[in-house]
Amino acid sequence: MRSQHLDGVAELAFRRAYALVHADLRAAIEAGCSNAKIPATQDELAEAASRLLGRIVVLRTCKDRPNERLPAAGYPATLFEYDRILD
Image (cartoon, rainbow, N blue to C red; front, side, top):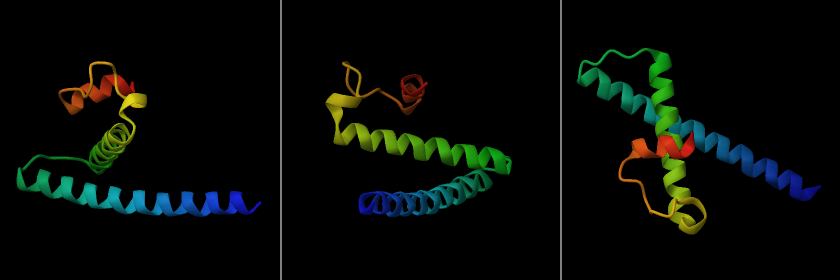
C-alpha cells in the first residue's frame, strides 16, 4: 500500500513539473511567434508545446538508455526524424 502511495506522489510531482514546463514552452513559442509575426491559435501553441516537450522527453530517454531506445543507426539527424520513430 505504501509503495502505491509513493508512486502516486511521484506521478503527481511529475505531472506538476510537466505542466509547468509545458506552460513555459508555450509562452516562449507564443512570444517567438509574436516577434516573428507568425499567427498561431491557442490550439496550435498548445500542440507545438506538447510536441516539443514530448521530443525533449524522448531525447532525454534516449540519452539515458541509448541501447534500448535508439535505432541501430544511432541518433536521427533531425528532430523531424523522431516523428517517424514515435509514430
